[in-house]
Image (cartoon, rainbow, N blue to C red; front, side, top):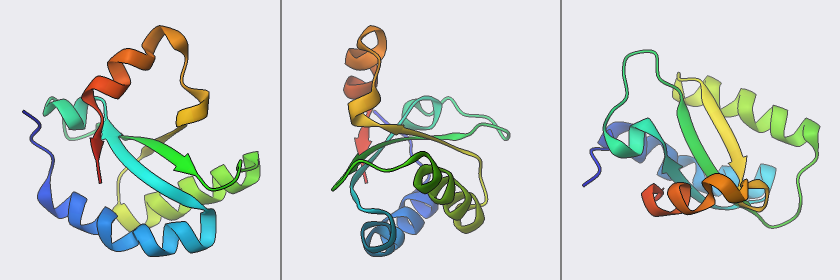
Length: 98
């Protein structure tokens, strides 16, 4: 079972309307060490994202900057459409919707 930080989840949930309006994010899921409860103090936050429209490189960079500023942790943004087939099943199995 996942041991996601409730405060971090609450902050992500609160940001969802702005993420949709500003960046076209339609769904967010946490995966990786934070979803597994194995993260350390310096761990980043791995986010699997769905978008209403394909984001540009610059939009992804702006989204990254925004999330780091709002959440206070490094983020790794992975659009669902960019998941590598070699890790797709693992990522989807451990992903926890926000």
